[in-house]
Image (cartoon, rainbow, N blue to C red; front, side, top):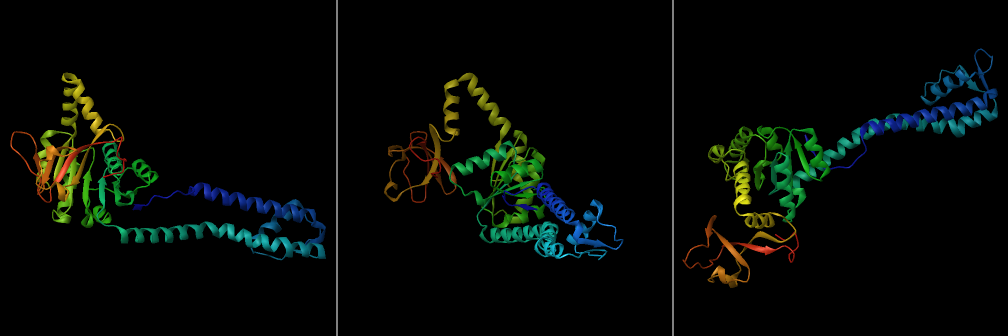
Length: 337
């Protein structure tokens, strides 16, 4: 099931409003009939009681009309023309309105899904919307990535509602199943982020994605234990982040070199201080030493591989290189890639 972000009234509340409106309409009709009961005649010819007024109002508004109670005076007939007949139409609209709204919502949602699918391309699928998944989405949005090109795959109802509330498209289901990933159009995806809470599930998702896409979609996965990282890479993941090892290393750095962890936190905290960024090498920079550039370049990406700048060997920028540099977040907008 695809859940597009939508703000709407709850079904129970909508139904309650319709029921209340129908009850109010019946009561108003009963009051009008009871006030003019002298103008009506029933088959017993003993006058209308309050119960008779309720009976006549219900059968009239529901278009049943048994004919055992009829208006006989001009005033009563005028009331039927000016009030009872419009009230009858309004009562039917209230009753049928719920069904019409459900059908209209289904049709509207189908149109929205079809329109969304036609525009879907080079999107990112995030499997799991827990702590890691939410952080990954936040990082994508901070770099200016379009929210409409992010798809969440989750099977927990709470996480699905949270994703929809945050304006994200969410697909309900288990990401280890091929049908669920095909629903997310994994074959045309740019990359798949695996942020589940189970290493076993991460391996199964990676295998499924690799099988469906023949290895053409980049897979970025997170695992808890270091020993499962190699298995996940064998399953098809291009990049594996070990959450427990990373957290443990940061804890160690905090203990031994506290200022170093402050720098790391500054680099990872968006919107302030320093931040890691990547851009293509400009034509005027080709042939230059990256250390001589105005920006602080820490590494190069050349033909898909990281080229560190450490050591005494002189390094020059080549055409097609990507520069990994540190930018000042206070001078550059947050949504700048």
